[in-house]
Length: 534
View: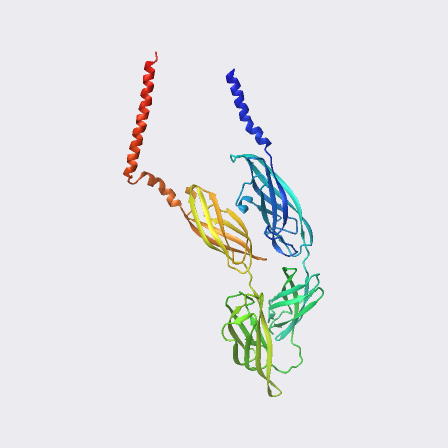
């Protein structure tokens, strides 16, 4: 009877973990959300590009239990999207946070990347966040699995609109002028920072215009754009693309548009022969704070010789390293000269102007007349994050591969959405999300995974991807030799081979003698007791 009761009691004990695990509770609560990060909130406008969206969740779980979030999936409403163009953004909390277990009352923040296209209508947008998790007991065993879904709305504001038009026409074989008019049709002040123009047939004499013009609501400004069209062009029109950069309300924006410009033949009216000097350059962007090599093409597209042509360079934002005064002598019609410059742009400016002052002599009514011509060449500033892997090491021990390293942003812009991934060798796809990396900042990272020694490669490749500028992604790669596998394979050989220290032999001999004496005493003692029992 006693055995039956004990058996029944034992079965009840076996059922207790099952019943208690079914009663274990655990959940997540969305306590905060918004554009930006936990360090800096953002006001998002249409056309802001890729921006961070952060959520804060709080854990609720019973005593002596922990909660492990598995995957967070953010459903993004159209026309918003993830950086790859889809409507789903997935995050593995353990990888992003570097921690995968949380106790009752603890909170954690998850950051997602959402792209806000230029044509996004202003308004409120509904997001849905689904997060799966596991509840673990104090021994680390999973006692419950669950999921929570949350819904929230965020606002996208309308951008301050700057409208613009480009008018004019190109005269074949002559230099002519296009007129770019910019107008602020929004409700806030806007500052035009720079303008870029490009075309296929038309040669734009100043394709990069530095800005600094303040446009109050309703006001406008005009830029005169010098162009030149070769006389042997057969087409009767060309497309000119205009990209305008401006700032408003503490944010920076860009707006692009394409215009059709007619190309016409020179009229039949007879004009007095005269020189016509134009300046062309293939360089439109400069790196700040370092010397840049720039070539300028000086060409006479007129029908008269420019005699004793001289060029004087000056700038308030660029230092000319080397000569700034050039004498070309006589420049015949159709001839050109190339000027090679080394320019040092200031680190305090976002756009640059190089002023060109020409003087030359031309014939007018059989008399020599000195003429002056002032023009400028504009340059934009190259602003990109550039993340490099400053150090990298990989090691293997006890069945685990560990990769550690440091990143540094050596560019002149903050790097966003920095992500480090193992992309070759082993553990491919293992990654960690680092988020933002400021200009001049450095940070460390660590990756690890389990792998058997027979599958361990000699080298591991690491890929770093990041948002270098609002419209451009950057990446850097590096390989490193895995340290430790040779040691792991030699340890058994070291344990069985080689001479032994004599002191270890003496210790082992004494230990064997003591164990032998104790064992003999126990054995013979038992035998003597068995003989004495009647």
